[in-house]
Amino acid sequence: MKLTRRMTLAAFAGMLALGTAAPAYAADLIAIITPSHDNPFFKAEAVGAEAKAKELGYEALVLVHDDDANKQSELIDTAIGRGAKAIILDNAGADATVAAVQKAKDAGVPSFLIDREINATGVAVAQIVSNNYQGAQLGAQEFVKLMGEKGNFVELVGKESDTNAGIRSKGYHDVIDDYPDLKMVAQQSANWSQTEAYSKMESILQANPDIKGVISGNDTMAMGAYAALAAAGRKDVIVVGFDGSNDVRDSITSGGIKATVLQPAFAQAQMAVEQANDFIKNKKSPAEEKQLMDCVLVNGDNAAKLETFALTN
Amino acid sequence: MFNTLTRPIFVALFLAAIGSLTACKILPTPSAENGGTGSAFNPDKMVEDIWAAKVIPYLQQKAGPFPEVHALAKTDPAAAGAKYGNPKKQANSPWTFAVRLEGKVVAANTQSRAATMDIDADGDGKADARVQIGPAMRGTALRDSLDFIQFNDFTNQIDFAQFGKAFNAYADKTVLSKLPREALEGRSVEVLGAYTPGSGQDLPLVTPAEAKIGPKP
Image (tube, rainbow over all chains, first blue to last red; front, side):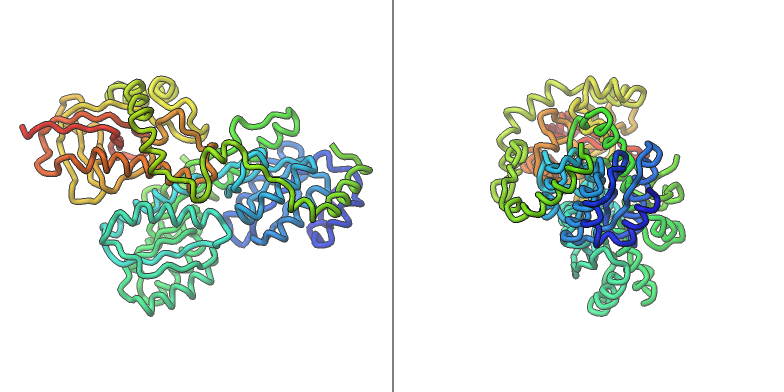
């Protein structure tokens, strides 16, 4: 099993053919498919899901789709081919994913979605997602307070294909736009990327030296933006992120970034595996397909309690 | 579900059928239709349509006096939820309670766009709850207090969120924007609304669906 699994990970591009020929050892396989582990958030999901799967006696097949819907479709074929009993999926697009999940369902493989929803119900068994809008409101309210309800600000938006990029931006603006003295001087996508946020922030700052705050759609972009601001001697600029990563926690406790919003990524991934287990063993679906998990504001008051996308008491 | 024999066939069949699959039905579920997609979705209109007929009657019937609800929420959230909460709330969400709040204004913040009044409900001179009076309003307490509103009836979080905001906007337009803003301290207040207890030290934040402010003392 170990050997086959390593082969799969090494060469999942050619996996379809291999999958069709693979022996039927898959009685206990759960596929865990997420975006790239470069972002610690997705890594935490994969680690959380894999740990829970193993704890419940499953073999885990961990794959990444890199936010590429075509690649995701291939990986779902791989999971089907390997005879996975369930797929845990942080998907690559609210519309593009519907067909891929339907394909798995038609092949008898149930999908349990985490983090991002899709624009259809009745296709996946569960969609366990953070209440991104509620979280964005928390972040925006803190941002508004830190800004004193006025001043020029910049918004860094996430990857367009990710539905959460839009939800968070909407949540931010639903709060911020109620304050006419807060003026957005630039809004750009940095595609969730730290390096891209760094370079975008550099050029935005050159064009708009009079900014007072930056609100970012996630923590990696917030880290990139803060690094660019610090390099330009502008540590006074208020930066707020989203996700609750350990990097941003450390920045908050050392007086850098001001706040972030914690998504319970680890718990969410584990819950999805538990529901998959219940479905596989007892044919039991969760009471509701779409399940929202609330986010929590993290600032100087509670940052020290944050560890790997969970708050300790 | 699969054995070694059927699985390759299935995959082969599937590959052969990719073309037809993409053209094949993905039926919208009834619930997705209820939530409305695309241009048909008009959250402001939806709220306007149910406000007088369903929202206000529901809150009137469900709401408990704030001091009672809040005391029970602190000692036994499940019991408070069963009595004053939305029994069909999302399993992972906190309770949102329907409340009737009566008391005196002890402080007001009308400088912020998210204006609020602090209310003493038990007569000890200290604030027990904070009431939002807009125009900027926080949270989705009104939406979340109603047992006939389900997240699963909406296409996605964005629609659900816009629907939540539409409640606040409607309350602001029809009720809160008409309230006085000056010399609020000492006046009596009656509010019918909802709140979600927070974890912080801040006062419980009540979102009104109805509000009356008495004359200057």
